Image (cartoon, rainbow, N blue to C red; front, side, top):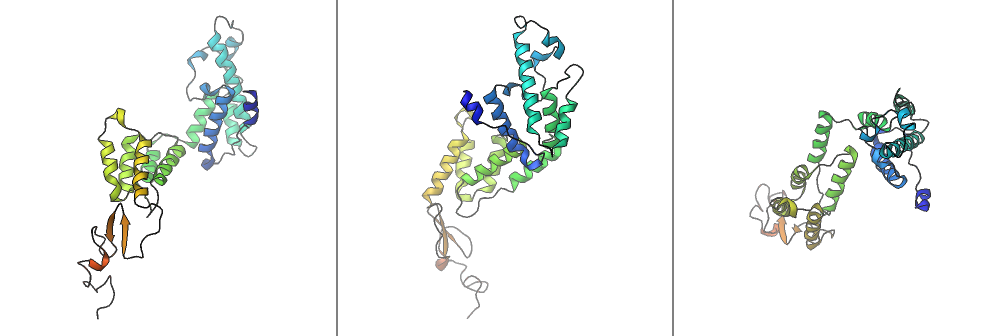
Amino acid sequence: MSDLKASIKLPLFDGKDENFPNWWARFKEFGCVHGFSDVLTETKPKELELSENDVKHTDEKNHPEAVTMFKKNAVAVAQLTMCFTNENAECMAFVYKSMTQEWPNGCVWIIIQRLFKKYRPSDLMVEVELNAKLQNLKLKDNESPTVLFTQIAGIENWYLHDLGEARVLPALTNALPKEYRHIVADYGLLAASARDMDVLETRLVSLWRSFGGGQPKDNGSEIVMAGVIECYLCKAVGHKANHCPQKGKNGGNGGGKNT
């Protein structure tokens, strides 16, 4: 374990908004390895109702949980202080502001409260931004459905928020080509205990692969997906362009000149 601790370097944070999600994910993992992850919350641990001075002078046999959490808080505050680079004066100010009369060496939960208030506030505008990003998801021609799941994971990471199936499924339905949507609809009808987003992704990718996923399209006369032919002239499914009932109308042969 000591080798593992030594191999994982403390992640630094420069104070830039776009770097916060990845830094926070790395710092939490750093905390897991070094044994203080359970104090990385926005709420004061119930074991620390005593003041810092009281914990220092308490008998560890009588209050082992309080002493343990006190030590973890001290380590977490120290590590956070070392995380913030010289350019990151505002976050260093959060450390100073966490030094209260009861906790003169700093409270990790106060630092985290201020970090989240600055970088990931929980307000109506965040919900509006998040919903807009979900609505703008779109799978490009011949892309694997995995691209959408990666984009959704990126949104969750950016907002540090688990979106939940109730938001993800409509976003997927809107973003996926129509040939995939029955899989999402069938998944939504399953009992909660039977649903697994990884399984849904696997099914969508399997269907994409059965289409010849990632392969070049035809020569332009039709688009082929899931064994379905889509006419490039009228965009209807079920026939090729050379059999299109619209061929010859409105300028003929896909907009060419009449002869």
